Amino acid sequence: MTDNPAMTMESDYEIRQRYNQGGGVENYTDGSDAKPSDQTSDEGVAMKKSINLVTAISVIVGSIIGSGIFISPKGVLEYSGSVGTALIVWALCGLAAFLGGLCYAELGCAITKSGGEYTYLNVAFGPFLAFLMLWINFLIVAPGNVAIISQTFAIYVIVPFYGDCLPPDWAVILISEACIIVIFFYNCATVVGAAWVQIVCTIAKVLGLLIIIIAGIVLLIQGNTEYLTFDGPGTSVSRVSIAFYNGLFAYAGWSCLNAITEEMTDPKRDFPISLSGSMITITIIYVLTNIAYFAAMSPQEMLASPAVAVTYGDKVLGNWSWLMPVAVALSTFGAANGQSLALSRLTFVGARDGFFPHLLGMVYVKFLTPLPALLTIVSSIFISDLQLNNYDNEQKLAKQSTSM
Image (tube, rainbow, N blue to C red; front, side, top):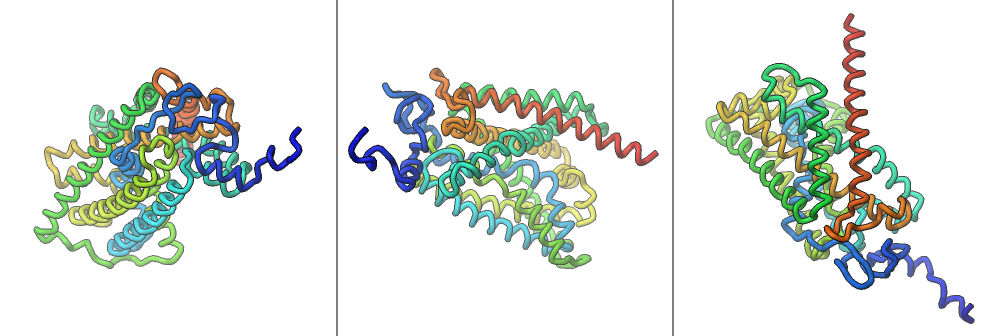
């Protein structure tokens, strides 16, 4: 023992300062004191710093823009009471998301450790809340999100082959599982490849929305503005709150970049630029897309449509209407890729801090990817995918029994 106990013990403040700098409460799972930014060294192995500014923007935009803006913006309209109020709700939701993005940019610059909300809860409130958040996300929230997104991708891939008929459940499940396998296969093999997939899908989904916006601008120039009014059945505080909930759901995903902080080449520069720029761009795109919808469709048509962008394409794009299902498929594939990227890093960091088995905090030496974490997540997503299909079947049987 030493004569001075203070030399052998760290204060709570010192532990949190070391945690903030990326060191974690404990040493990394390779047994060294190497920071996560190190690629390979004599001390240990960690993931590459391969996320630049362009990739950071694509992760945010690609994770936020999923299927919602293409399929069901009618949730905001239904509870807003009028087209004009719905457009205001979309803009205010974008403002709220922008402010949230700025908060996460500040957190990402101050705490340069991967893990997102888990890491911030651990630093601010200790391990108990962080542990709960980590396991809830691992078991329920994140696998369910990826399963829903992958099934949406499957539906829009195979629907053109079935015409007016609904595709069989087994086909949706097979395509959905194939989507999950492909995403996790290249995420296991290369971080750079996963980043490029995210960039390509982000460009594709933004181009799909720009097609809708440009066609809408043409319709507005032609004088199709009769639906852009505040006329409607009206609303109430409770209904507007539900409209905001639907709108904010479409903006969710700005925290995905914070899950991969340690892999960013320059987080202090890229966080403010990527988050603020992405949220402003997405808000403008969402508002203009909704204006374009109402330039071609009445509120009643939108509320009756199961997939708004597809209905819009059938009415406006003519022979090019097939672009909308393709845009939705690429959009959902990119969103699933972004969610999987974030979830794998969340699991990796949690294991490194001792909340998961030690194995899940290891990095595959050949590819420098969190291979054990990725393989574990695949199994939980498969289970969620099958459970989601079983739930859908139970709902269909319940409807059939009540209609008899």
